[in-house]
Length: 501
Ligand SMILES: Nc1ncnc2c1ncn2[C@@H]1O[C@H](COP(=O)(O)OP(=O)(O)OP(=O)(O)O)[C@@H](O)[C@H]1O
Image (tube, rainbow, N blue to C red; front, side, top):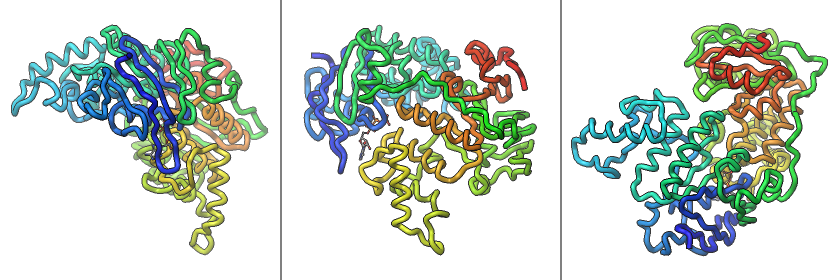
């Protein structure tokens, strides 16, 4: 029997069967990928493997024993969540070995030198570009991502490492660094469970792929037996067309400037100027930390501007006021939906309905029937999987939360929509739906800014791509001239003026 055996596990929540009779093995020295659309049950299975949730039926067998009766076995399963979860004010060495009781560094006064010496060997093994004494807040996101994996691996009992979308905001070069680490972990004899929505990554790193759909295991296959098309079909139960270019077609209003940014400076960026035309999708490429999100959050009003101006439809725009932005039709859809997007603890209906107040309120009171009708339509149009409209939005899968946020913004008749990594953690079928929606909106005259770490996404959807490097604009490309090599060069700060605007 494999080291970890999922023995016919079922898990139900009120109104939902999240997992139905799942049988799965994770072998040592292999990478086993768990694939599935949003809401398929991946996170629930991971929670069972790490002991956060107990199965409703069946059992988890670790090293031949039932984990429910031998809870110390859970210590052999290390888990790296998708979100970076480090102490940014502490050093790299401190983050690696915290809590100190977990390693050999217990006691009132631990020896900093020894801690840093030991940290150095982990830093080298994982190829992290940092010193042991560096504050984690000052190192790059990709180094933080690697540090987080290294931290999990300092657990000496680890036999299985679970990586939940470890590359969701990394560029290709950075992903390769993570993969080198995964291969090293596997070579040392551990088993890895990998979760991702990105096909090229699944095929690059996996030995085996298991597919979940609607809580059921559809298949487990060696990666050599699968191709993209088959995998898509297993995941979604249907074929999905993915080869389309989805740039908006130029309309009569093309070249009409909708938004104009001049000399904008703020947190982590300097002197940014660009124009967004009506009906276009303007992509923003760059490494994580290049300043793209900060520019967008400053335009929206979350972050203060140090200098610069913004004009929308020729009118001076008051920076620093998010409610005015929303009121006047400028929306920012954050990549951090947990912090800026959803209202946790509130139902799906409230979360979407709050944007419809203008339509559904009569003399200041919400007309419940109207609200229910409009929200139901949005849930249907965006295929948001929720057992009822009254479900707390926190219990929806990540992808379904994202769809709810997008549906809400779309319902507000936006003029300018800023999407920051809109398909992070989103399955392929929904991704294609989002691309088509963006195209449709742009063709209706909305100006769209698309910040993305996925070159494929930018090249497929954007009419133009601006690149940023270390807080500055480093290139401006029309899509016809935006080759992959030029874009990659520009996001790394090498030339890349493209057909500079
Ligand atoms: N605590 C909970 N209470 C109620 N329902 C839940 C809970 N946790 C998960 N679910 C439901 O179980 C189903 C499976 O969700 P899960 O988060 O495991 O999917 P997933 O495959 O990880 O999706 P994603 O790729 O979007 O993260 C979903 O319908 C979700 O709404």
